[in-house]
Image (cartoon, rainbow, N blue to C red; front, side):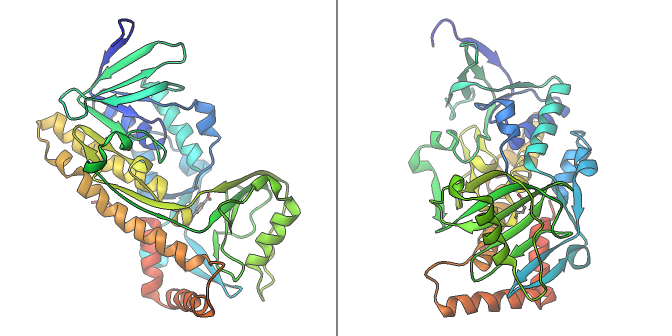
Length: 398
Ligand code: PHB
């Protein structure tokens, strides 16, 4: 270790200052457990990184009941259902009637803003724009993370535990030797073309549309800004699409005998989102634990990514809390299995929604008709609707 390296001791060292890392740090501080969060991006970059916008009721409760902020309730919008649209016809799923739950439309970057503000308010140690991050000695009693701050100062954080909350491209899971982890992975032959548009909402709730031209999702942000997506080729160049071409593509995917027409406006953001499903097993190596996208990735179709990350954090927080309160490692030892149970349910749900709603270029008439049969099976059955509604609004937390 170079002489100039500054050593900091803490209880939990957290790699990643996205919603998972910040929420964990926030909960730990409320329980009197010290942590340091390091993040390679700067605050503004994360604030402008657009991700999904649907929060399960359990995620909303975590934000409000732990004192992060009530902005999700005042700025966010409660949604009591969605429309499943196929064959040009919408079928409303009423979540309140089906499972007595709702979701909240509140963008992930707003969750980040609220969490970062809460950490700042409470004197949390969150360091943005760090470089050369390393995690080491993970199988010892003093696991460490090292980083360089923007001023060039090198630090070593010595902790009881390291938490890898550094997202799907993060380095923490790669610090687990290949022979000690299983990587479960599938790629999809499509991606999402996402836009942000200045326009009023086209419908009261989100529309998940299957069509012979491919999938489209008509989502929202607020009264003036909307979020929409359509299935595209993974290699698509977002910049090559004119606004006119985007509107034509979106509209033909929601066209139907009811004459439903999208409300158009200036498109101010265009991007192509990758699609994959991934799980790292186990979510632990020595005294390092993985949480959120660092350990698993879902395609965005069911909006499960952030919700799953917060569910991991809840389980991990309880386990760390037990350890520091009683010295018992029991819940920590069970963390990976407990978190993965929900992860695999969500993996299945996200995969199912994806395959049921998207189409493949090479699909046969049998596959096309089978998917329509599946959609009709779900939409016409209370049991089918209930499975979707329960998974979408989020399984109960134990
Ligand atoms: C979004 O609004 O960005 C969004 C909503 C629902 C999804 C995915 C993304 O399933």
